[in-house]
Image (tube, rainbow, N blue to C red; front, side, top):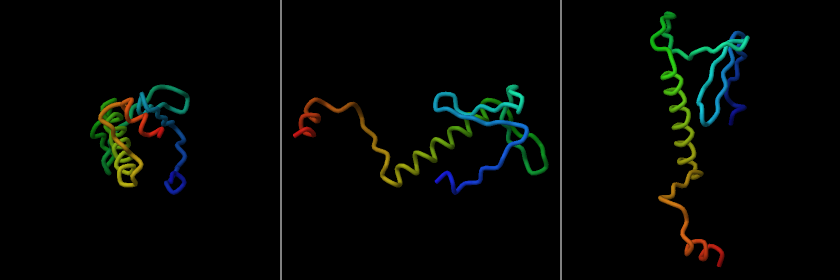
Length: 90
C-alpha cells in the first residue's frame, strides 16, 4: 500500500515517527523543527506540538478504521481466560 502513495523528497527537512512519540520534524542539519498548518496564501494558521499530535491522531485513526473495515482489528475487553485457552487448545 505504501508504494501507491507519493513519497516526495524533502530537501530542507526530515520527518520521522514512532508509535510512542508521534511525528518528529528536524531541519536537514538536525535542528528541531515544528509542524504547521499553512493556508494557500502561505499564512501560518497553527503551529506547534499540538499540530503534530493532531496529525498523528488522524494517521492512527485512519489506520484503525482501515483495519476495522478489512477485518484485521479485533478488540477484546480483557485478556483471555484460562477456560478460553483450554477451549482453544482442544
